[in-house]
Each structure stands twice: as structure tokens, then as C-alpha cells.
Length: 256
Image 1 (cartoon, rainbow, N blue to C red):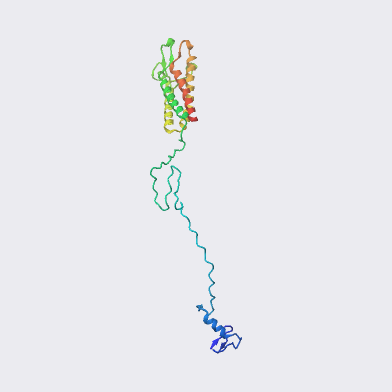
Image 2: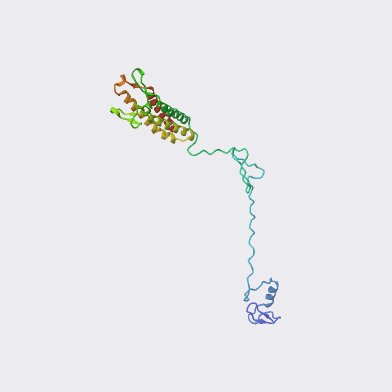
């Protein structure tokens, strides 16, 4: 016995048409025999056949190697060629890598170095002027150096640095000695570090040194007896000149 594929009615094996709905049974049997069997899921419901395969995807284009085969990679002069992917890093032999300059210490202009050398000389001469004659007596006799106001009893000041006797302000040689050491030290730091900040620090000390020297010269010239009794010695003029040169050298280093 067979069943109608349309309505499920039971029919005889030799029946050509369904006795219930009239569907042709011979044609249905031929389609059932030729169709490939598909496993039925649980429950008896027929699973539809899979969809036909779509158009094949185009093959991916091959990525050309870099640099292309047959061409040599070129790199700028002085720069190492890049290493191959996955290769261990190895410093290139014979390639000079540029040195990295420290911050604020780039190439200085010649005026910077000239100013630094002038500042060194100024500091040393201001220091030396402390031991040169600051005051000379009549006809050059009885000269007194700046350090005599510190070391000698008859000229010693009360506080070793400054005196305002009789209304004439006067600084001792200890002040010029300290200022000269400071200027020389800052000049050496300026040359060694190649930075401008030591010149900036030396600038106010040069102004102070120049002011001290001019104050002393003024007190000597206006002192008791005037220029007929005492006169300024060579040490005061060295003090003034090289304080002024130290000021110029500091400005030159700052400009360079």
C-alpha cells in the first residue's frame, strides 16, 4: 500500500491516482525515487534542501614585497637602512649617528666665548687690585692698598668691610677680594657649562663692583686735604676699569 504525497490518503500500490484528491501517484513515485534522500529531523517534518552555492569569491591579490623584487632600497646618506621584519636589531657599522646636544648648550657664537674670557680676566684683575695701592700720599709716598684696611692696625676698619668716617663712605679691599673671586668663579662655570645663567649672575656683581670702586674713588678725591694731600692709587683705577670690563663681558656672553 502507498500513501498520497499530497493528502496522505492510503492507496493501492498499482493505483495511478489518489482515491481522495486525485493526485497522480505514478509521477509522485518517480520524483521520490529520483530525489536524493535527506535525513528527516525529529518530528517527521521534511527539511528543505540547502541553497545552491553562490558565485566563488575572487582570489586575493598578492601583496608585492617592499622593496619590489629586483630593486635595491635606498636610504639617505648617514642613516642606517631599516632591518628586515623579525630580525634582531644590530647597530650599523660605520654609520655616524648625530650626537644629541644637551638642552640649552647648543653651539655658541664667538661673542659668547670672548665675553666669557673677558669676564675671567676681569674677575682676576679685580681680585688683584685689592693688593695694589688705593691711596698714595704726597708725591707718591705712603701708599695704602685695599687690604691694608683689613690687615694693618693703623688703617683697619671696625667691621673689615665698610667705613663712613667723617662723612666719606669707603669700602675695604676685602670687598673687592670677594667680588673678584665671585666673578672669576662664575666665569669658569660659564666656560665649562656653556650656559648663559652664570653670565646672568655675574652681571649684578659687576655692577656692585663698579659702584664700590667709584664710591672709593670719589671719597679719595673728596677726602681731607683734597687731591693735594692724597691721590688715588693704581689699584683703584684697575678696580674701576676691570669692573667695567666684567660688565661688558657678561653682556657679551648673554648676547651669544
